[in-house]
Length: 261
Image (cartoon, rainbow, N blue to C red; front, side, top):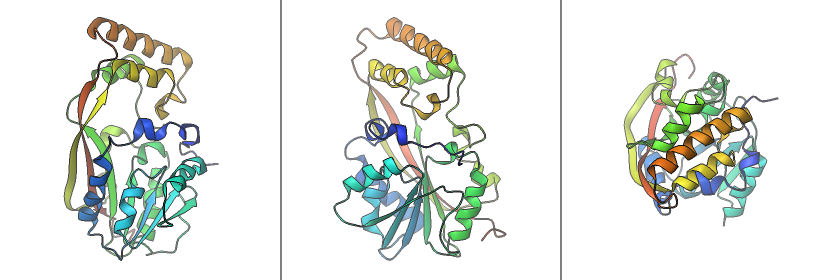
């Protein structure tokens, strides 16, 4: 059985809680195209394709887009979005990629390595299926201004974003370098803003809609909720009034170690 985090339980709300703000998704493909020098003839694999947050807007720009995920439910949502058969979907775990060596012109991975304790095995498989000199295109979100409610939550619960043994969120920009991968080209970035309300944030943790909540003890969840609720009561006169968080999405290309290529 895989130890990777499966998002089947999040199928019905994932796009509402993890998607880009309206209009932002149309800017994301250009980051991958620029970072990976992708063309209309490129053959691309995305691991952890989910509901297609990256795949749906990006697939029309390449020749063949393959998406893989352990969650059949998430990929079912993706299929419902497709107007054409532009994306081929495969159910499976990224620790074993059912493809021949040197198959893809790029592999895309966005927000997956913090969910896979055996992530080093995934890197070996990615290196195996990449064509010579082809890159891993690693994408991740960041914030330029802190979400204070998230800080209150994390300080109270002492939780991290990652599964046990997986890549820490704070290591997103360094773990590949630590494993001998090398940056290839310039990091691509798109800036945008996200609106939240204090009550919508509270609702997220009350509903355990973050994967980091799924294995947390009830007592820890309740302690965190109490701390967030107290902070909202003390600092937000209207808990339904939106506040803005400045965010950004990055894509960096990496080449595998020569011993793995």
